[in-house]
Length: 369
Image (cartoon, rainbow, N blue to C red):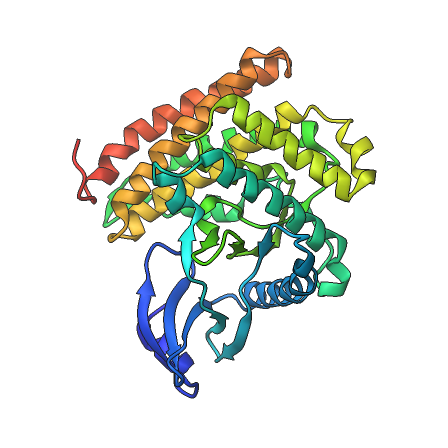
């Protein structure tokens, strides 16, 4: 979206742009009002996504504002001040939240990673419960699981790599191979996760939480409530993005804390969860999340010149985590021999293909080996 369109969106409002916030999926800006108050503007090109976030945030703000007097919730959400709309875009204007993201705090060596992630885990459990339990009140559509087939968005990002600046990066045969392997993996995921309850997707990675400067209350930002996935995906978002700061035992403790909190909030969830191998599902959804993110990062290496180095590092991280989850599963007795062969082949072929195409992508970056 162009800066001109943002200007048009703000044309008949009382706001002016202070600066654009880089490295965000949506177009985000810090703006000011006529009263010199700082606000946060998030611009959507997809009207449905904007309306979902508007409904979610408004409901959670009213609900938690009323009950947080008794400190019942680990989180708050920013107040929406105004909705701006034209034919192309919708902009949500939020009250500005001053503080640092959880990812910034994790990076600083003087902070306690377990304490930070523990707060995120508790808040995520509460958000999943609140949204899922009050879907009709919020006005959201019924949850439809979408995780049993390869993501169209993921396929589109891979297809974008077929030709880069007139040169072939990913061949048609490589694309076909990746999609076939992905489909075989999703067959296993379907078998093992069939019937597992879904939650509205928070996108709970540490970059989407703000610890306020004036106190330790965390503010949840960037909801993606138009997607529905099992809670494992959000747990992966927290624990895997904090992988360099937590050990295996700490991760296991946090997962158990989440499950205990959800069961406490929703006792009828306990007999459902007992039907599944939760350790297996955690790794399967880890594979799901990381293969999705690898495709995203590859496309963004091509598309986003200013943040190319960050996307290259992100791709390398997701490829390593993807392989670790596959190795973990195949060393245990969770799957039969044929299923293990599918995953090992998936890992080997993905690494082979990406090793072949990665040097081509590096030609379009500022990084050289």
